[in-house]
Image (cartoon, rainbow, N blue to C red; front, side, top):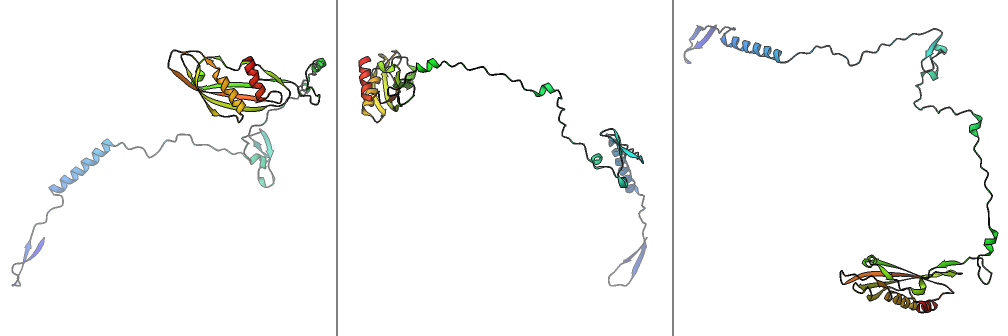
Length: 263
């Protein structure tokens, strides 16, 4: 290889030197080529090459069509269907089969269509029992007598767990027969009972009925109540609710007299 060199910048002399060119297949090139070939061989040994042809999971479908110049077979019914004009199939053959199941065939027996008929038995009415029922004395109304309890009480709270020995109602606990409608009232008392004696020692009106006579009667009933004595604790607190019914025949005054006479 020729190489031009200038010895001095001031002079115009140019020196021509012939230098030896480095060969292509030198030691460095051969080492690099050998390393590349070794890496490729190592990759071929580690990685397994798959075939370019893949195996299908399902076999390929084979479609065979046979056209009959006279007709086409209906695969749903298994019968031969004639072709329409122009070589097209009828609509009921081309349309897909319905996914809705058909209704089951109904039985054709004549006896199954008749419903059993049972003749009803004659009602037996005791007409004599109707005359035995009492009516109002004036005879204007046919309303029968009804039995009702004029006073009903319920115990709530912790006091409801105690055994009630005497409800304090006396004669008001018996049911009465009435002719006319009644008016209903409600009275609520807060009560504290001494466990040792089972007697109420504190009574306070919580909800009034609006009738002072009924409130006074309810207080007497609560004061006369007795519970089963208990050794545990000093007192038990609860609430006593009384429901009272008044009518024309049974007023508040007569109810109080009835309790005082029979209580």
